[in-house]
Image (cartoon, rainbow, N blue to C red; front, top):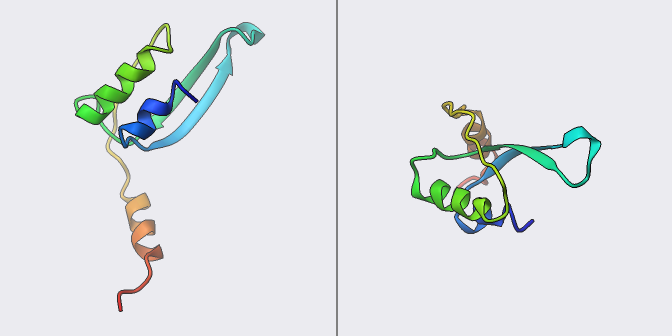
Length: 82
């Protein structure tokens, strides 16, 4: 949880997290994460910097535009204004 705490403290929402154990070992675990944000954003930079204190290697595999689906659902679930 310490490794991922930088995302929470910097307000970066993690939408997906997958873990894989390398060669069946509990000593080496690899994670793939989807986050809301771009590497150019300061909050993401700070989160990745904090992650680097707990990781031997960090790779950004790419970026893609976010779907509007989550925002649309959130709007639908908001209580009506009174």
